[in-house]
Image 1 (cartoon, protein in one colour):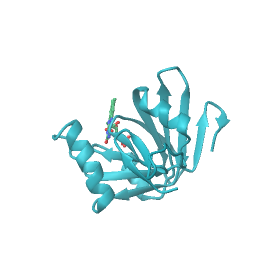
Image 2 (cartoon, rainbow, N blue to C red):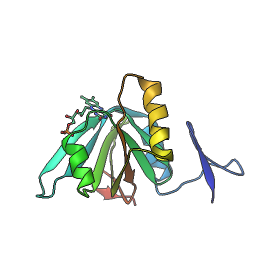
Image 3 (cartoon, rainbow, N blue to C red):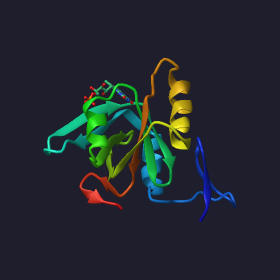
Image 4 (cartoon, protein in one colour):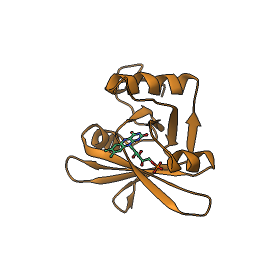
Length: 146
Ligand SMILES: Cc1cc2nc3c(=O)[nH]c(=O)nc-3n(C[C@H](O)[C@H](O)[C@H](O)COP(=O)(O)O)c2cc1C
């Protein structure tokens, strides 16, 4: 089903809520998450690196976008081909993890979208790149949902 993204979520052409790669329950948990999310990558030698991220949004049914404001190892890992893992906690105490391949954009539509959202949070944030996490696996705790 085709849908368009609004700040409040996905609305199908007929007006129905739709579920894409991200299960509806996970998207709801995301909307009510507490605290920063945690984003993990790995370098070419397998050394993991995790960072707190606040500047992260659901881009569409199958992707999150994270603003690279001050990434160092994270950026290097992504550019070297690392997959990524995004962990967040819901208000009700569930822990959710989304895993997948990661793209990196410094121009184009996705980059401009990230810049708009990033500027709206704080225009001083540099937003030098947009890391895009593709939703390929989704877990609630140890339970695989996707
Ligand atoms: C609560 C919190 C939220 C953060 N959110 C972001 C973010 O959304 N984007 C970003 O680039 N850095 C963010 N940072 C800063 C990075 O976590 C930090 O610069 C990190 O050390 C990056 O370095 P590394 O990639 O070498 O690990 C945040 C830091 C904290 C403490």
